[in-house]
Image (cartoon, rainbow, N blue to C red; front, side, top):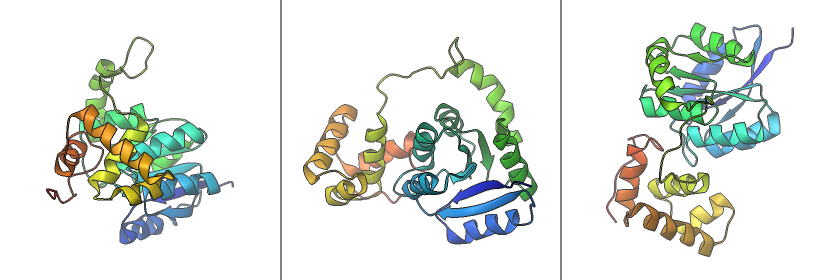
Length: 225
């Protein structure tokens, strides 16, 4: 029997170990890698090419939603299931928009997680029951006539989302430049452009915006600078 290869992307080691322990009892599922950050999840997907990535939404360096978008763009054969402690409509909508195939609450049972992995591997989708009911109604409102997500005004580009998250995590331009593989000057340009576009000119304000739009969860400490 060919097993479904899975990459676990979760920043808490004890949680990853729990998922791995649960899934090792499934004869048709094999965990082949673990990632502690969203950026590492993208890199390991490139290296390992898992069939399914189980992705926490609140990942450092690169949030789970943006990591999902990048994985789906560059490795369309890999399916992604988002895990979250919250069932916010914005998170669910972004999961769909960015190509995620499933959305599970962290309270989900191990049986449901295994079922979700099998379902998305077969080309289907899987959402927690609490999410699925709301999704049926909201999906019709958020999709256009061709079944694609409606575009919203003043949207941030993928690069701007990355920069915003790194700023919200308190990283200075030097670290942002290293993370993105660009020069210090380019990183500073990204920061200034982002502030002008959003008309927000301090780190605390950008962090609040990142939390409010679901780019990061509200576990970040706000520090006025």
